[in-house]
Image (spheres, chains in turn cyan, red, purple):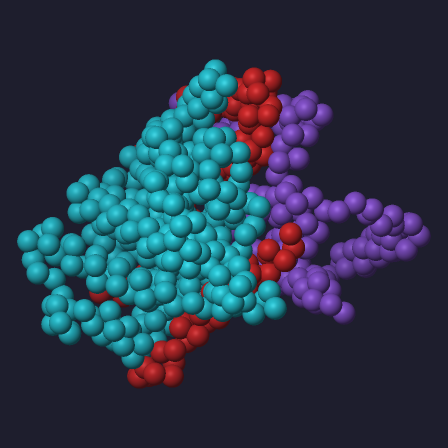
Amino acid sequence: MIAIEALIKIVVLVVIILTIVAYLVLLERKISAYMQDRIGPNRVGPKGLFQPLADVLKLVLKEMIVPAKANKFIHALAPVISITVAVGALAVIPFANYIVIGGQKISLLIANVNIGVLYILALSSLGVYGITLSGWASNNKYSLLGGLRSSAQMISYELSLGLSLVGVLMIDGTLQLDKITMAQSGGLWNIIYQPIGFLVFVTAAFAETNRLPFDLPEAEPELVGGYHTEYSGMRWGLFFLSEYTNMIVSSALMVTLYFGGWSLPFVNYSALGANLAALVQFVTFFAKLGILIFVFMWVRWTLPRFRYDQLMNVGWKIMLPLAILNLLGTGAVMLALK
Amino acid sequence: MLTDYIPIFLMLAVGAVLGIVMGNINRILGPRRPTAEKLSTYESGMEPIRTARERFSVRFYLVAILFILFDVEIVFMYPWAVNFMSLGWFGFIEMLIFIVILLIGYYYVIKKGALQWQ
Amino acid sequence: MNWYDILFYAFALITVVSAAGVVLSRNIVYAAFSLLFTFFGVAALYVLLSADFLAITQILLYVGGVLVLIVFGVMLTNRANKVEVKHGGLTLAPAVLVAGVIAGTLIGVLTTTKWPAASFEPYEETARPLGALLMTQFVLPFELASVLLLVALVGAVIIARREKARRV
């Protein structure tokens, strides 16, 4: 029974997220275009709205090319690891509170685990494998170098990512994402208490998702396509899909940890009735998510790419000490005010 | 508590199935016309020279080691953080000592130039 | 057999089969790769034992850290994929003997010990009591762990930077 309920929720969520990803790609192309004073895709459907469909169709109908010298098994497995890890992280994100169907309360959280925050961190640390293994299996120099750089980058920034959110955990005293949301529902979002922590978190999240200005693994002028140079068709599409899903996951984590999750201040949810409240919460969450994702895209066209040594320096010598200072400062202030 | 994890296992399974299906869909829907050129590794249009799997800088290895050590320290902080208010100053000072010892090591790493990338 | 048993045996199977893969694989890359599934299986078994914090730590540290190190080491070694891991040969007989003795001892202990069934309910949340214990009853090991990590940190830097020191 639990399994069936969960499976329904999972399928619905995955379909929603995949649709959102498809349109995020279009959105990113449009935003990029407008920022460069172009129009962007506008041929397929009204205002280019069917562009994602055409993109998917194109990818699906391509020829699958596996280089003769590649390690076939690992070459096939690497994108599967990437997508599994990216989709798996969605399980613990509280998009809304609960709905009532036939008098039964159904939580909209797929898995209410005690250690939600750590679960996402653990899965994001597994993301390294998809990239490293694809780079290695392709037997291509660019791929390997891209994969290697990426894994070193990801593990370096994972430290700052893990440290920066300790401040939030100290304030709310829990590792459960829905409880963190509840704690902020009064309107005092954690961003007010944790501006430095948030800054470190955002930087680390950009690096973890391999977005500009940290997209060195696939810095096209020097590394061609990076770790997915030797991928084609939907296998390449899977890497693309995981990158965008990861972007959604880290933005969703930011919304939950720092911006009050699905809650809005001064809204009386009990007056709305459970289902309407859930809808409002759902919309609130995705509106916040959308703003953050827009920031991701905005930054892409604002900041130039870092050099690799700068990237490592920022991660180890600025972000890491900053996160530790933030942690100690938060602790001292909290205890002094107690 | 255990029942909370069944959806997690399911979610990971759904993700994996999605990956396997999508990763092989081109076998069915796509054309298949392999040529020797098409299957060769891309190297900016040149004939690929040797294999890509050569030796690499030890620094990548060092970063991985340092990552593990710092990561262990961070994992200790999570159980502390959720108890932070009930532990009070006592817990704070304990963690301070823990972090200061870590920072001595961090200072050594920086001074030795282990994280210097040329 | 209920679903708990089914899950347990499924994960136990994954753990044991992939562990065998680590030992028996002739390709060192596949051996490292099998280890990924072994760690995963063990983490899942921890979950079944209601030790969720331990499970997540297992994934964070072993899969996300230690195994990355191993994979780096294996991948970056010259022609790692051509290294033939040899089995058998002269060392087979003593290996079987030692393994047999150890296995016999383990099985003996396993069957003769009276395993007490836990009489308390599993914790709802493991991270909180763990943190409380770590900060009160087990303070000394906790701080010593920090010193141990410091030693490892210094050691790692010295080993990796040796060639530079010689040149200067």
